Length: 101
Image (cartoon, rainbow, N blue to C red; front, side, top):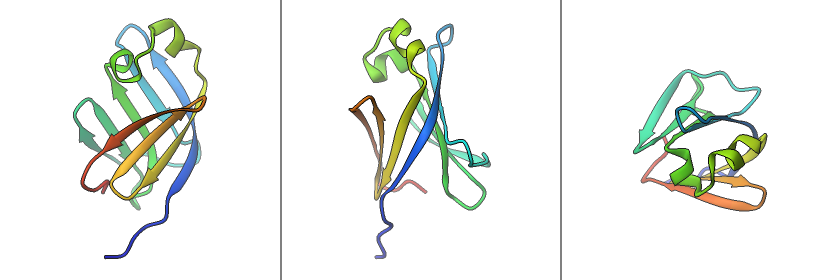
């Protein structure tokens, strides 16, 4: 089995407080399709590269208030084999699955 190297991308962080969801968008990547993992969507480009992430029930997932989430402007997304990690100011949030296709 061939292992992909880890990828680390800076992402713009947007929070919709009315609907309690966060959008993390990698600036130079276009969106083509999503993979759903519970309340999280992993967005991909047409060639399968990570283009962003959408997190529903964001206050619960990040364990932060709406006010705190609304103040965040940037995050890092790290993709490894079988997991995705969102890094906000040094605090890491993991999304695990068998394969991020």
